[in-house]
Amino acid sequence: MQNFALTWTDADGTPCASAVAYNKTSAEQRQGELLKAKASEIEIVPVRPGELPDPKA
Image (cartoon, rainbow, N blue to C red; front, side):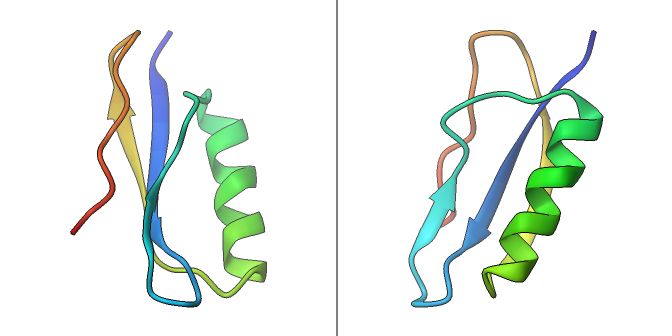
């Protein structure tokens, strides 16, 4: 099973990254939640088990 994480920028300009990994469907749902919260630069990125992305600087 492929895992995914998200990176984004909060409405206040703070770079963020997921603290958990998601399956594809859950990652897409989280992306929708972030859009509603006015986040920008949202990316769904594939990750390996035990790995998570760093927030973009």
